Image (cartoon, rainbow over all chains, first blue to last red; front, side):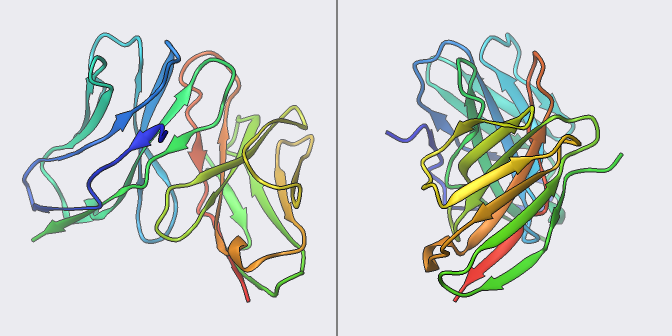
Length: 115
Length: 114
């Protein structure tokens, strides 16, 4: 079974509007971390935001926020006030805290911001 | 504060050849992980190095090997290259400590096997 599922291959958003990128995860580990990365066409994976499974509040970093719904096993990324520079691939990833140190990635969502 | 650096940026090899990719971690980081990202896919974990030892390995054949040096930099070696090894190879560094252990990625090396 896929550990990370991103069901939106592509998304479009108008400049200055907000957009939500979906991510669901599958783990039996009680302790885990969820990450979002941005990958522009240059290839570098840029860390955006982190949410720990025991964090009581949703994580926020500037225009990025993570809508964490533990019971539904979802960790959606919300980008507010979209900018043209937000156009990129976005990847959701998970690390299970027990034993493993590697990240499991989804297949990504390509976001296009329309002027 | 220098981020993660990788070299070379691009590489073209032919089937059967061997290749070495290099990575320098972010300043202060001691753990290096390598990922393979095929076109249109998310990155797949290859292995992780900590204290000059391979600590964990993903589902990759023994043709993929690595090394970590005392200064925490790392190399990824791939022997007997196959066409399917063509991909973007990403190096990520992190600090072995409690907390998020967030991995920070380099710009990647794009390998093309002909």
